[in-house]
Image (cartoon, rainbow over the protein chains, first blue to last red):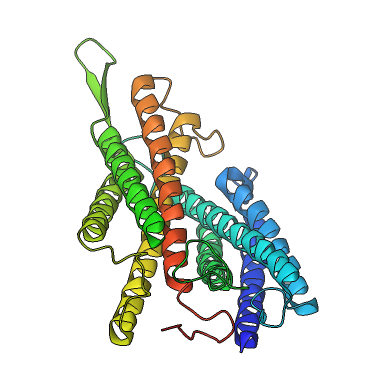
Amino acid sequence: MGLIVVKAEALMRAISCSLLILTSCLVALDAQTKYIVFTYAKKASYKDLNSLPVLVYIDAVAAAYNFFQLCKCSIRPCCGGNKSELLPSSHRKFLYLEWVCFLLDQVAVYIVFGATVSATQGSMLAMTGSKVLQWMKLCDRYTRFCMQIGGALLCGYAASISMGVLSSISAYNLFRLYSPTKFLQSKS
Amino acid sequence: MGLIVVKAEALMRAISCSLLILTSCLVALDAQTKYIVFTYAKKASYKDLNSLPVLVYIDAVAAAYNFFQLCKCSIRPCCGGNKSELLPSSHRKFLYLEWVCFLLDQVAVYIVFGATVSATQGSMLAMTGSKVLQWMKLCDRYTRFCMQIGGALLCGYAASISMGVLSSISAYNLFRLYSPTKFLQSKS
């Protein structure tokens, strides 16, 4: 029965990994050159806005993390496996592993979500500009560039949602090991 | 024993509520007027940047949500209480309530965290400007205004962390009710 959870977790990790790689690539490979005068070319790239390179690096690291967890789960179904056959000593070890899994997943989802929101806010300012702050808008000039960033951000949000589901799965894997009546006491 | 969890939850909700109100007030009451020429005054307020009013509204709503949950918990310790004395039918009702608690807490923490990150990104751009995008920086003119926003954002992150801990507590309250071996089967 624990196999359903293991399969769901592996599927969500594979989806998250793909979406994170897609986001990184879409942002990092985005560039558009515009000729303002015939001889003077100006190039827009993801490095123009601080938050976009940060998104590329964070999503790459998060993809690697999810891939590592996926490999670990496929070699030895440690996460969400059936604990009823375990000896008390290995049960305790698995409990620590579940705590590490849970905390890492929590940190990962908040960092990925934060990086995506930050990139969205930067891009929104680049799209709308700010009259009060005398910031000019840029997306009327680099339309294709901005469209691709928009697509990347949508992928980023999809990845955040799937990682959010993953963090709930790891919370389920961890907390179901505890007694419903006694405070933080596991059932071994 | 379940009382420890109820107390911890009530404490975290009170802390979150206070920090969220503090953040809202610090941002909303922040304003600075500078005289550029003797007769011409220019005022910086939180409405200059789109993401700051959004932060004020979201933090106010989240504070109200946490206050509501705090009242509910103090009237009747539904969250994290001792379920061992419950009848099977009311156990089922409590399970639904725990699911609602868990999902609302998850949504709340992501929205508050997202609004805080978004405001940080906007404020960072206002502080550093962008040479490539020809955006000028503003914080050398409105120093006190920017310092207060910085303090508010720190409070916002503290609130996000305490709401993150709250979402883990509600995950613990929910998932410890499930069997460690059988998939999504509760122990009644």
